[in-house]
Length: 395
Ligand SMILES: C[S@@+](CC[C@H](N)C(=O)[O-])C[C@H]1O[C@@H](n2cnc3c(N)ncnc32)[C@H](O)[C@@H]1O
Image (cartoon, rainbow, N blue to C red; front, side):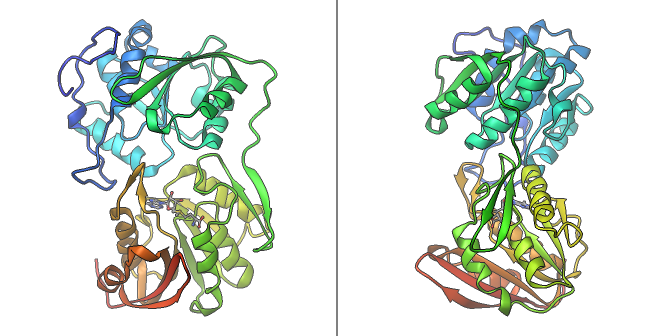
């Protein structure tokens, strides 16, 4: 439904919004990757009457949008209902940047404000639109904040893909709200209407902390952090090679998640300064919490950044990376390649990129081409660990 009236499974048609005009940039773009999905359209249709009830313009201040992928929800609501001052939280910086780009391109700049996941995101909100996360912890952390800080009469219109929705999600929401009502599914997505904040429900306990015996370190995680407080299996294998990584004054934990790599490097090398960087707001907060929990707060700096964009070229001696192979729900190699390119740009000649990946992926040729001479340093039944030595300068 592009540039046509907005469909509702049963709801009213609303003004038009051209979903197809949305772009994913600076996130990976490809033929099988989209900037909006049926869930966006379904949530907007299910919320249409409530959105229409907000006063045009400043009424947008009562609306909060969470989990928007590339701006379809926030910009769609703002455009279709003439709203300004819409608060938005997106965990991924690339999504936040895409929303800003899309707002600019579609003449909607200034209508939405991106904010951290916090009490001010929800303070006084009467309507929340929410692309549901798959992680129950992320669901829990966000639901607790909405319950505690939105108006008591708040309505949440949430939605997700049927294949990702579970009854456990309803249970988590029901811990915080009295009413969790599923709506009719449409194009493999389902809306949920959630109301009635429960008084006396437990406050948010995030970040969670867990002592990891293997590392001898505390690992901390906010809800949306990859792997939570656990040590990833690939990372565990990669860290076996820490003694063989080059001597350096500083190092970068690229895609830091809970900060386990940064903490191991800082603990093993007392003079090392470590940058822990991720595009996930939750990951950056978690890596900072992990650093503090282990007394490494002055040695580790956590930075939210998309693929090292704020790091100067040829400035780093050591980058350590366990790359993702998912883009959202889609399996796509592009994100790992984007991070290899980022490491190649930021490494000084002779600098090292250490990375781990599933055996079947065989990224070695790409690493040779994009970063520099690459050796396989180890293999086990599941993973390959490589070291790439940065060649001469590239852009
Ligand atoms: C496989 S996880 C590894 C996390 C952590 N290093 C660990 O070992 O548990 C990959 C991480 O890359 C991050 N990531 C994905 N795209 C990114 C990007 N464009 N820039 C920075 N980080 C990114 C994800 O948010 C995720 O935390």
